[in-house]
Image (cartoon, rainbow over all chains, first blue to last red; front, side):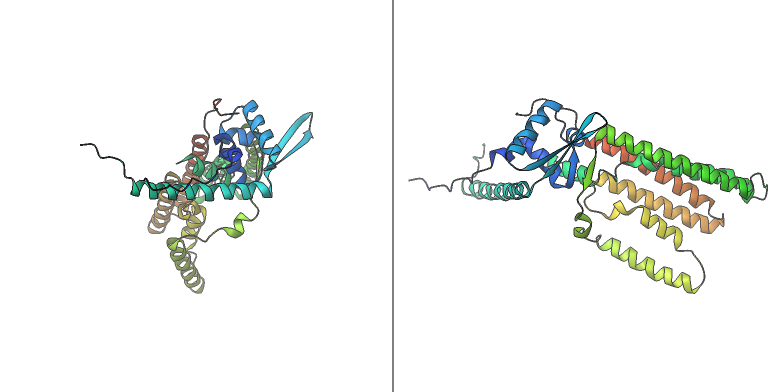
Length: 114
Length: 201
């Protein structure tokens, strides 16, 4: 009977998506950033970035602040405490998965081609 | 550099990478040096009054340029507020940084006792090329600053050997700092990815 493998830990899908992870990574390295900087750093289009920010805002991971300045709206975004915790948890989970992957690869090494 | 490291570095060092903000300062330094050289060589083409007037004008240009460059970077690449606690959390430089810092301190005390300022050009080179000692910087930036620090130190040595009164050192310092500013700006442009549309919404 094959040995039972430990299940991979659950990953937070809101954080795991590459575009959202990029936004959260930027925000974790600063206090607050504006929409233009997030767009420049992540390379996302305006529409896509706006959608991702709305999702993160609804999940309570970021705090979006809109200020009217000379007839234009300035949007600045900051990571909430929950966002910081979720991002830290995400990286801990990823390290666990990486560790499990390393154990699996030593137990069941890839077949060597002759 | 992987995406996580790139994003973290870009965000943390965004203001440091805006190298073009100080460009006129170094160009003004070179201009003043060449304008002042005839005076230094006793030709007296440019008196102290004109020198001070030119200095004030060039500093005003630098201030204006700084404001314009800050506006440009903000409009083109965006704005961010740095992490206020990061400075406190920052680890001191590596072993090399401590060795140089302690050596400089001992040398500065020695110079103070002997009423010379021989340590000053080297200390200035050390202060202006701090990214060399910071392990968070990508290798290319550390190499740039390392080469820059080396050239400034060599120019200070040449200055002392030829007794040129600071001309070689000051000209090299301005050229190197200008080149490092341009290199930082180019690094900033290289760290920004092209716009992508394929991310999952």
